[in-house]
Every structure is written in C-alpha cells, then in structure tokens.
Image (cartoon, rainbow, N blue to C red; front, side):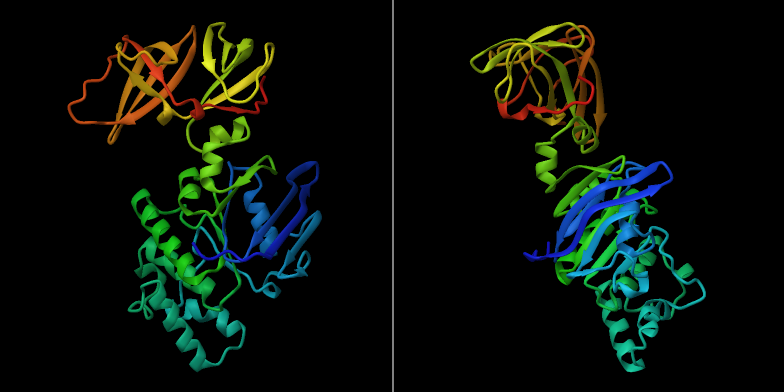
Amino acid sequence: MGKVQDKPILSLTNLKKIYGDYHAVNDVSIDIHGGEFITLLGPSGSGKTTVLNMIAGFEFPSDGHIIFQGQPIDLLLPEKRNIGMVFQNYALFPHMTIFDNIAFPLKMRRVNKAEIIRLVAEVLDLVELGDYADRKPDQLSGGQQQRVALARAIVFDPPLLLLDEPLGALDKKLREQMQIELKKLHTRLKKTMIFVTHDQEEALVLSDRIVVLNHGKIEQIGPPNELYDNPTNEFVAGFIGESNLLKGQVRSSESDLAVLKLDDGSEHKLELPGQVRSGDKVCCCLRPEKIILVDDNHTDFHLTGVLEDTIFVGETKRYTIRIGNKTLLNAREMNIRNKVGPKPGDRVKISWEPESIKLIQSTSI
C-alpha cells in the first residue's frame, strides 16, 4: 500500500442524506489520509454509495460537511472537485477509441495536444494496454474495459480516486486478478482511493482501513485484521467473514471459567475473556477456523457435540456441530490428504485457544 500521510486529505463530519423520512446516511464522520485505500463496506441500502456520491458531488448533503484538501466542497459541482471516478458499468463512450476515451477529461481541461498524447500513452502503459489505443470499447474484454476506465480516471492526476463497485460486473477469476492489479496500481501511484463494495473478501484483500456501514450509520472502522479478529458487535462479526455466535446468560463465574447458559437452555463451562459476572447476558464470537476437532485422548477441550454435517470445499472441510439442544457451530479445517475425519452422527470434542473467543455487543440479548 502507498505511504499514508498524517494530515487528512478528506474529512466527512456529521454527514447526513435524508429523502423525506428516510435517512440514507445518518451522522457519518470519517477522516481519510493521503495515500490511504479506504473501503466503504456494507449490504445493499447501507448508505455506502450515497456517501461516495456526496464526495463526488452527484448528491449534496442534507447536513454535515465535506472538507477536501482543506476546503469545503459540500456544494461544489462534480467538475469543480478535481476527483477521479470509476463506475461499475465502466461508463465508456462506445463510439470513441480507447485513446479518445482516456483523453476526454484532458480535453475538457483544455490540455494541449502534445501533452494529451504523452499522458494517455503513459497511463495506457501503466494499465498494460499500450497496444489498444485505436480499438473501441466493444473490442475489449470486461477486464480490459475496466482498466480503460481506471486509466481515464487517473490520467488527469486527481489527488483522490473514487471507485463504485468497479469489479462487480466481472466473473470471480477475473475479479480476483483485477484486485491484484488494483493493489499494484495503488502502490505505484500512492493515491488516496475510496472503494465501495458489498464483497467482504474484496474489502479484506484491498484495504488499509474498512468502514462498515449499516442502515446509514458506521458500525466500525479499522484495518482488515482488526475488524476480522476484534469485531465490536454482532453485525460486524456476521458481515465480515463467518462467525459462530454463542448467546446466553452467565450462571456463575469463578477465576477464568464461567458457566454459560445458552439460549437453547443448555449449560457449558467456558473460559470467557474479560470480567463477566453471574447474571450477565453475553454474546460470544468464535470464528470457524479457530475451532479444532480433537480426538478422545485429548484432555484439553471445551465442548462435546454431535457432528451434523460435513461439506467438502476443495482445500477445506466444513463441519456443522450441534452442542446442547439446538445450538449449531460451524468449524473449518484444512483438507489434509489421507486424514480420516468424523462422520455425521459421531460425537466430537472441540477446542480452541482461549484468546479466540471474543465478547461482542448484541442487539438481540
């Protein structure tokens, strides 16, 4: 990733967008620093694209402020903001050549012809399309068209680049290739980039920081590993990656061990993080890959359950394990050749490292 500067290049303060009675964006505040790759992540209707559109100038805030490079831009028209934009549908001019598509923002800025030729050639080489200048968009693949869209957005050297689900129309393999190319491009250009996606894996791969949005509000901001390893609440735990949630009430607590009565009525002795007291209602988050299936000779284990199902997923096996009366846990382990695993119906013991289980906020307890 590019080197991040200390002073924010962009500040959103108490940003709101209201349509009638509907709050699409509700009190969003973020400081974004020069050189950062920031991802706005959330489900459909979370407000991520609306935030991006307000930064770009396609929407004006109902309240709050946008400060870009030290200047307020709340009410500036898009063409006055000097911000690059890449759309999911590429938005290329079908009747123009690739050269003319990329040159378009330079011509709008009245750059002289010789400079246009030089700059377009530079960005075409940067996105590895140097031999495609005379082609039309319909003569290119989806991935190549997306690279043209990127080239057009960076050719006038904007200090900020906005990307609205730019990889959403690509198939899985091409999408993964473009993620790598986008990371390389960010490293080379050292530009500030704000990326919108609903794809959690994409956000984890690309980002310096992720802003998780839900119903127009920020749920959590942080580096990918922080959000994955230490989600603050049930929504983030469930939206970023896969999580097992154990909800219940602490029946008793002594030293590091607590007896937890789950919502299904079963009771289990667990080592819980932090200070919990008898009567506390808690929600515990445990990632599937942290769960270890242990054999009968293993004395250090946490729970016993019944294996409900095994799913083969290439390099991994996924297990569904019932503990107590109704609670199901998902476990995942590497598919090691010649290892004979348990079968559905078998009783199994499961374990995990004490630091793997996290206490998080829950909206339903």
